Image 1 (cartoon, rainbow, N blue to C red):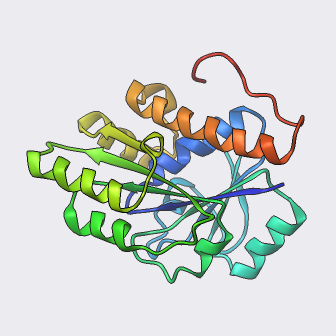
Image 2: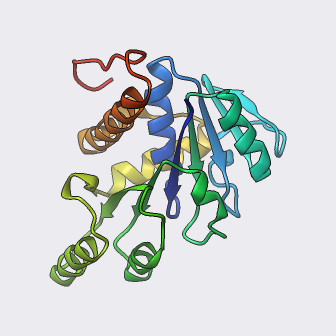
Length: 219
């Protein structure tokens, strides 16, 4: 069964790349889909043909495909995982293809409000990853209230310190066409690994006996 994970937010192409890299290292076939207006994720690939699948770094990429094409990949189980990059604003129809939605956002209030007000079917599992950069006290109060009102499980919320190191790694994804996993902070690796394990556990429950989770540490 193909598992579809949607990522909502802006400038998180590095985060999706990390998730795709970890899954690929575990020998899963992974398709990364870019639905962002500026094609942020596709800018991490040196050469590609628009709306055509491109293989690079043992991952598969496609920019702005038709929704019928994604449905076909899901039905045919062409890939083990499909990771879809949305921006903060989306028509929303693609959300319904997803088994899980992962919000990846900074602490700016107008971005958090978009996340808070988005209506999703209850069957879609939700995760929240917040990039914390110079937080102030009122930010924490607002975020806690938001998590409560969204009825988000505490185990589905992750906070990641965001500084110069993370920004440089993000730039490396586009300018060096590299996924700088080895340079990534331990905080970021823990978050990525925690999410991957959760999604693999879901997959394992649906396909009993097919997957075997590694018991060791992070890749």
